[in-house]
Length: 98
Image (cartoon, rainbow, N blue to C red; front, top):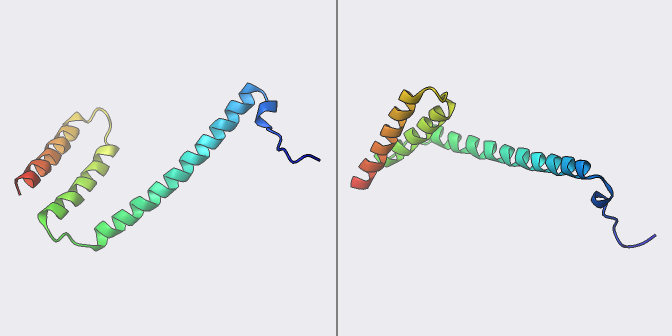
């Protein structure tokens, strides 16, 4: 027996190595997605339980909800996308004036 590890990836074919890399990448993405969903749930719980104390806080909540809605829109729904963009621009402009 030797103390040096055997590099198994080098003994497999290129297709098998690519398949392994793909599986590893997918596992990493799924892990990151689960963490992201958990953080999103925590944020949404905060947004649900803590009322906004100022107009900028209310605008931040509205911005979050509008972005969620925009993400669910189809590509063909340009009118609603434009309306969302205008409202978000209004929030930014009005916040800069304060």
